[in-house]
Length: 547
Image (cartoon, rainbow, N blue to C red; front, side, top):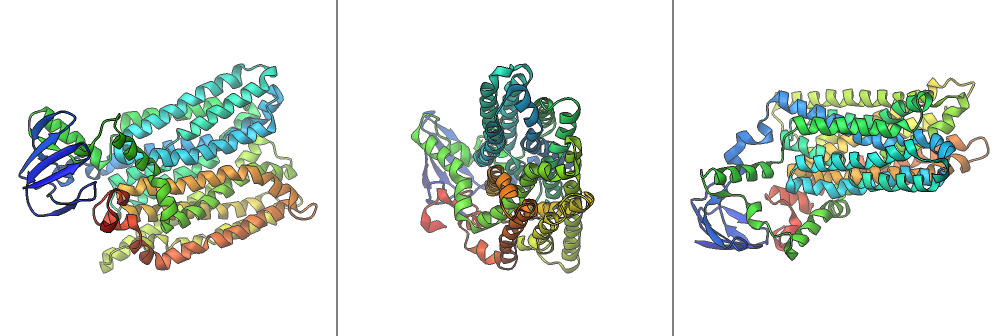
């Protein structure tokens, strides 16, 4: 008979001798899924309850891993729509700037802040929402996120449609506030990537990961393509309504077709069902450790959950280094969003023509997706023939050949985007190479993180990746105009600006090669990776000597 105390819950238990660690850091003789008798004393309810702890292996057929292939890919398709919707919100706004300036007198500074602070807020939104999906479930987290984002679109629609010419400052401030709140409410790709980890094991998730990453990066170029036509033919103010309609469609599809996938939440739901139906008195560890919302322990736990992605970004070399290069790569795309009008004006392009230039980046994304799918099949075939076991580092191998396309494409673009008499298709060819590299960097880094940290911490780990991507993209809005107008001799500002970015890209792709060859050593020294291997959800919840 062993006595255990955890939070506000105490219980005594007689069971086997399997060793587990409690959330308080104490080591107890408990057996998950094999307990014969347990007397649970819940202090908040003030009564003793007879029962046992329910383990995941007992309801394996009810978990997301057991969904049919058809159901899994239906969910993946809907998640792709969500990713396009969320990233379109960040990239389409620039197409309303001219009309807001001319109609309402909104200043250039406010408009730039609307673009940049949305991305900065989006970066923090990814971090703040991601861990709650691991604690409370993927479905409610995404529904609340999508709902709030759509809600903040409504005031922007009305301000842009019914404002008065003398209200420029008020309209600009209102749109800026709504953009910041919309960014904070955006869960980003960290939660959707966590859903992939819930449904697929490490060896079968890569095809779904490839599709989701492709949709995510496509959102950043779909925005200016759609926005260019809206600006040219119906008015830039329609971009707000377009964001709302696409976002609402994404939320409805998710509400109708995407169930909960988080294993711990599904086990808790099954435990409650059995208790309510008087089938069996079973509990989950999360239920036993749950504290009142009015207690200090609850808010301590909440602070720990919120800060987990930031801790991983600061303390985990895997998350830190790969997130930095992924963030820089994404910042390039948003730098092109800002600089492409200046560059394509050399050929006298109108808004819809400038928007179509982003298709070249989209073609690069599709080529990158095709290369990744080919590489996945090649490695899986090799494992089947030779019976080898894949390590997370094998997921970075194709990046050794595609990452150098980032600085190569930028240098080529820099010195061919010089205007007539050179044809405009030439710089667009180099943009396609940048698209291949950006897709490969994002896809390989998040795939490596999910494989390294598993479904328990994948959302927090990839949340750091999303944080860097959105933060760098937001910051790029402030420097890109000076970069393309003040660096280099007169008449050479545009090529010199892109050359500077290419030089930075050469430096930042170095960690790719280091992790490819030495990643296993880094993972062995990772507190979080070791915690996952030992079956703990968060090493910060254990005593230091246990990790």
